Image (tube, rainbow over all chains, first blue to last red; front, top):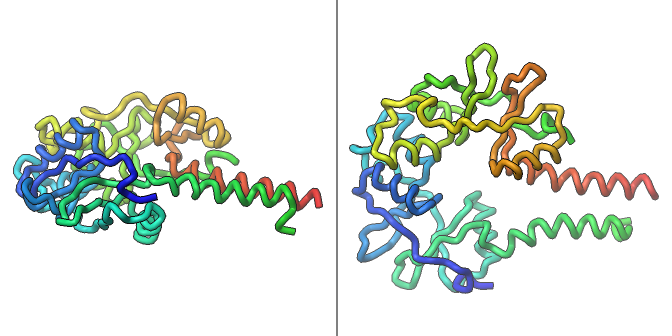
Length: 144
Length: 141
């Protein structure tokens, strides 16, 4: 299966100069876990992201006022991207190898067109099916 | 399998008068996104839970300054608990019934002694199922 076959929507984004209260409102109002930070609304290439974790641990814990602190100061720079023609099993491999739960999907012009999470991948079922297969083999004595 | 076998033991806790900056620092120090709120440091009876999501949406997103607020101001006060000697299955049922992703574990005195998250259940449930079946097959042959 390819990424472009998944039901992805163009994500809500924020800018590096937005204040944290603005980005927190976007996270809350849109019920988001991940908020990409892009260079500009015109050219939506991702340069980082923020979550509740960054807001709490990189700002609140350090005593920074969220109304005076910009996204650029606390955003997370560690992210991975794939294209629409990337296979979903490759996405799963990238997530597992790098211990991340999501990937940004970029179009040819490097603008962000979606976010793919582990829950959306068909491989998540295969992961649990593997343990069921082991149980099936054990029941039929094929391991012995 | 008992809850006490899969839980994170002795989690960092705070009281309701803890400042949110202090709570956020505890999340950094303990690398966690959830802090149980207890009645007192002495009895550790759970009275609420506070997560990084609570801090973000209930203060920052609403334009409030979290540096002026305490855990008691924003914590979720519907605490779901499970006893440490309960089964993992009972724990799962409680999480499903109450639609929570984390549950506080209490000892015989009602003091918070652990936390179980959905990920803890998922990892250990698969392993226990596999181990149980292999054991049954081994004993039969």
